[in-house]
Length: 227
Ligand SMILES: [Mg+2]
Image (cartoon, rainbow, N blue to C red; front, side, top):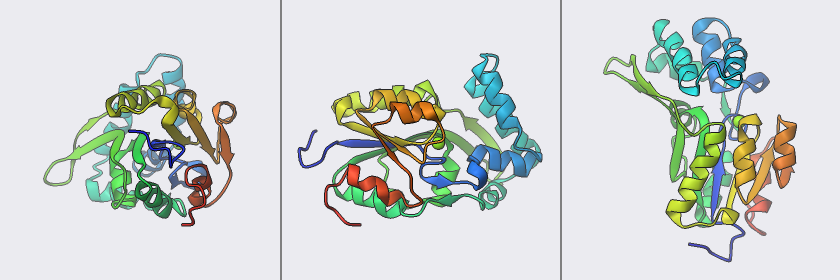
């Protein structure tokens, strides 16, 4: 359903680096690998293997989560280890304002669902596409499921949601920061690169917002609304 009072009908968001700040730009994967395996270097190595086509995305997730499980980390330990990560200033206010304006809001991310639930339990998102971790009754890591919707898959998720909701891609916007966001940026009708860490994303984006406050993306979506 389109609504001419808004420039778009749906906004998709990345999480790490876009809605969540990590020290030195660390993602949730780097923070948890550092905590439970003693090094965040796995991420660079495994990303290189993934890019070279020698490691599937699902196997990459599997290696990381097994490392935490094998160290004995339980749900409460994982939650405590998320302490260095913060919801970026203004995210709560901005996303709720967009929801109130009638936008359909979707997260399409390579993050962990546990992090979003922990840092933003009152989030207004209609749908969350992310990696999943499940626990047994003692809080031990019991199972996990890699998202098929990271990297090029982010664009596939957006196409799927848009098709199902009957929203033209031109009416779908995206906000992201990094190299895994390039494909979805090329697919969405409008992309904001928020504090981008990737030149290719900047080139694919329609607008760049450099700010410590996420509310600075709002002028692109809400005309004259103060939050
Ligand atoms: Mg990101």
